[in-house]
Image (cartoon, rainbow, N blue to C red; front, top):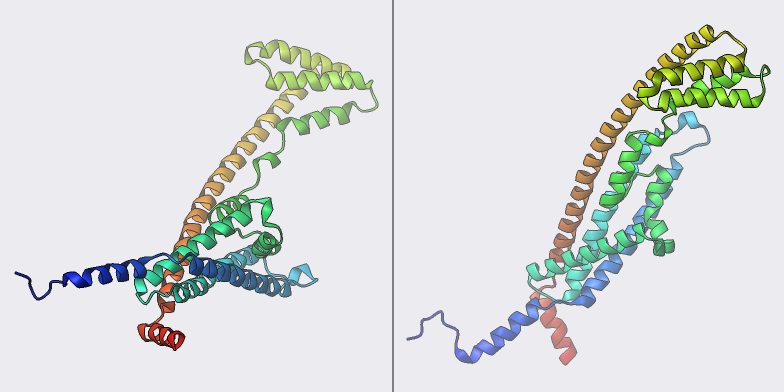
Amino acid sequence: MATSSSIPPASLPAADTRTVLLNQVSWGAIFAGAVTALVTQVILNMVGVGVGLSSVGPVAADNPAASTLSLSAGVWFVASGVVASLVGGFIAGRLSGKPVTGAAGLHGLVSWAVTTLVVLYLLTSAAGGLIGGAFSGVTSTLGGAGSLVGGTVQTAAQAAAPSLSKISNPLDGIEQSVRNQAAGQDPQAAKDAAVAAIRALFTGDPAQKAQAETRAADALAKAQGIPVDQAKTQIQDYRKQYEETVATAKQKAEAAAVAAKSAATQGAFYGALALILGALAGFLGGRFGAPKLHTLADGYAARRA
């Protein structure tokens, strides 16, 4: 015995067809939404470039700090991405022809996903050309705030800590001192021999430290024309200078690593948050753009007339 809520068998095919149509993906609408979002983001980012450049004057003292410009560029990029996702999602939802807000919202979400993949490709490949330059224009012009996840992490880490490659070699100052003190007193070969002996002393096998120190003292005494005892005292000063420089370089490297790790962590979280906000904006834009049933009926009737 059939209940009052049962669907008549004759109406099952129509109900199934309607369900399929309402949940069918409209890739044309998604593509249109993605293109609209990309163009919108290009326009907003170019506006950001103009605003940023207008705040930079010829006098450096009157200009905003680099950190301020970088932060402003990052905030503008994220905001423009959210707005572009909202606009693209709205277009995708409206053109999908789905009066169900959930289906239209999903079209907006997929449109955002396509837009994000295109932006990532343009920012990470040389094939982006003019469009990729437009997207990265804000960050490159205003100090490199970064974009999306990968760019944000990399730029934040570089801005927060000095490059380890810039830490000076602890032997550079010692070698320069040896060459300066020996200048004009002995041939170049003697100075080179003294430098090589001192380098071997500090970087060679610790087990042969005594022999290396003796050879370094002899070479230094010959290069500078001083007694061996005085050369040994000078080498002890060089040793102290070397150890202090190494300790300082180690502290700088540790501080740089900690700062880079902290900046990369923050950049990853901020980038993820920006992507989540963009996805939400795309979905809500699709829901807002979902056409009404009466609008579809009126349009269908107009085409039939």
